[in-house]
Length: 420
Image (cartoon, rainbow, N blue to C red; front, top):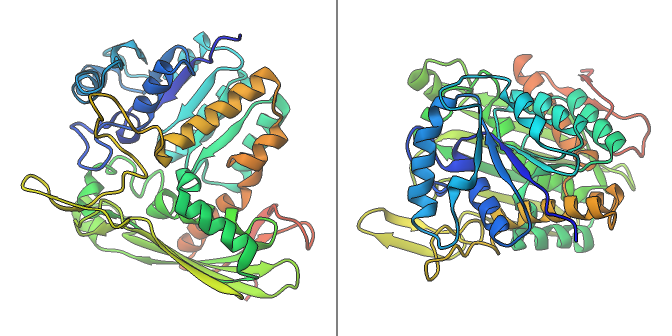
């Protein structure tokens, strides 16, 4: 039996470790990526674990935090086994290159770093023969997306996007109903938020390397693309913005709230639909860390989903009233053990790992993964929408057209200013 692949995690922030200079004030204070990988190691599905950032002076505090929230909480999980790059005290913006030298073909990379660093790290991993998972958005431009998809295909490795909403049983059921029962696409509206105090966590990159649309609209843009894949395609994007709060709090010239208005075409009969994707990071503190909901209308029916509210409320003296969602993530231990294996935040990583292992064993092909995972080959349209939205904002709200090579194509080949 082949040895399990080694895993290198790029990024040391909230989603990986739960540390943002202090324990994150969110539902992810334990981190997600490192905790999942430690549990998969306990289960024998991964081998060696490593984590790579850019500032080695942070690792002392990160290790102490992970020991408090993982090592002292869950039986059988020891975060001290995770190797770290660069060395303690060393600052190296390209530490990923030297860290990769000790990893081999068939190993696994997971990238949770600022958006504008994804492409270089992912391409280096692919060239070395590693399978790659990238947080959303995987890249910020159509050209970079296509380049990574092509490189992964040529190298024969998996390159996928971490979009855990696809593993939420309610979202998955909604997608299946959309495809089977609801007719042509007509209208979609989604909203997703972060509380305004979270802006401090995003200070280093907000309005510089990325924006709130790339960060949050990427979730529901991907879901909509996935639900309508092969049946409809996005064709024109116009972006709207609100400003003021981030500017006043951070002295940064960036948007508070962004809406992407997208025109779609149903491929079977060329009828039209439209979608509104809205994201904001200036919401008030509420019963949930992130509001997340959508409405879908087809020509034969409609669906409403409120992912943030699952009919489960908790109130304590310490934290007040909360709407809990353990379907996404369950850090609360059961009998002293980690018990989040069936959450969709966990399943997303395990499905990717299983795909990589199957490719290594030659029991699956890249085409098989296209059917089951959010591969770079099947998610081009989502990146095109997000880039067109950014370009529309930079052009004072001018619309941008997604260009296709033929009337039946699902993959946009270019983004151009729309003719008015």
